[in-house]
Image (cartoon, rainbow, N blue to C red):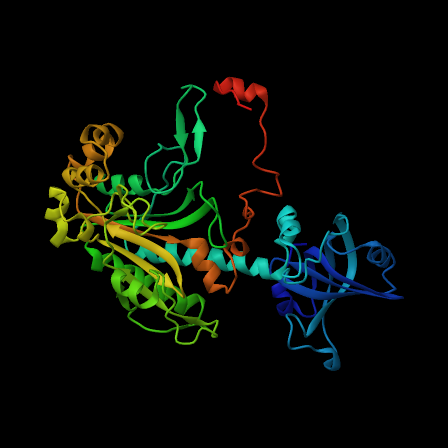
Length: 470
C-alpha cells in the first residue's frame, strides 16, 4: 500500500491507509493503547483496540522514537473528542497492523519540547535528535522556503546561479583564513573562501552579467551568537549598474520575501530609510542602528540602509581612536570610491575623507548584508593597495589574475552579500544563528557531535610534509 503523509489523512476519512514515522507519545490504557505518530508533515493520534492481537502486542512493547509503518483506518472522532486546536484533531487512526522498522534507545532528552530548557552541549552533541523537535523542524523548513523564494525571484530577474570553488587562494580580505595544506605541492596551501568576492567579480569579467549563489564562507575569527566559522551568504553581483540599481533590487526582494513568507510581520517603513555612516555614529553610536519604534514587538521589522562609509581607517583605530597605524580598508579592498572621490583615490590623497561606494542593509540592529560598487579598473585597485602600504610590484604578483581580468575589458559592476543565517534568525525570532543552522559549531568553534576539530594520523601528516611542534 502506498504511503500517505500524516497531513493528508483528513482527506482519507473512512479509508484504510499506510503511514510511516516515529512514535511521538505513547499512552497505555490497559486494554487499549493510544499513541501519537509523527512524520515530516505532522502528527496524528492512533488507537490500537484489543481485538488486534498482533498489533496490540507491538503497541505495548514500543516506546517513543521507535520507527514504525502502520496500516489502519482513518476514523472521524466522536464530536466530544474533536480538538480544533491541533492538526488532525477531528480524526484518528484505528490501527490494524504495526511493523517495527527500527527500535530506539530512550532519547537523552525530550524531543517534543521547544528545547530551550536543555543545555546546548547536549543539544549539539545529539543534534540529529535535537533536529526532530517541532521548533527546529520549523526553522529548517522555513529556511528552505526562504532560499527557494530567493532563487525563484532572482531567476525571474535574469540571474544565474553559479558555484565557486571551496579550495582557493589566501588573500587579504579582512579576516583570518582557514588554510588547507597541499599534498602534491608540499609547503604550499589552499585557503577556504572567506567569501566569493574575487570569483564573482571575475564572473562579471566573463560576461555573465548577473550571478548569484548560496555560498559557503569560512572565516577563522572569534565567535558570537550571530557568527560561526562556517556560514552561508546569499551572494550576488550585477554588471552595468550603479549603487541605486543594486539597492533597489535588494530592497524589492526583501519586501517580497517578507510579504510572501512572513505575512504576520510588519515592515516599519517602505522605502527603507537611508542613513549616512556619519549620522549613524553620531545619533546611534553604531553603524548597525536598531530604529524600531517599538522594540517589544517581535513582528516589527525595521530595515535601513547605511551609506557613505569612509573608505579607509587606521589599522588599530577601532581599539584605540588616537592611534596612528597604517591605513586599511573599512569593508573590503575591492570596493570603489564614490565618483567624486575617484580622483583622490588615484592620486592617493585626501585619504581620511574618501568615501566608498559601500552600502549595508541593517535589520533590527543587525547587519544582514553589505555590498558595494567595485573597482573595475586596474589602476584604481592598485591605488587601494598602495594606500594600504602594499607596493605595486607585490600587488601585481598577488592579484595578477584580477588585474589582468580588469585589463581585458571588465564592465562596471557591483553587488551585495546577505548573511543568510542571520536573516533567518531574525525572521524566526531566534536568539542566535545556531538555531537556524542544521549542524552548527558551538561557541568555541567545535563540532560536538563529530568531536571536531580532531587529531589526524602521523601517516596523514607525513603525506603532507607536516611536522607538529610541541
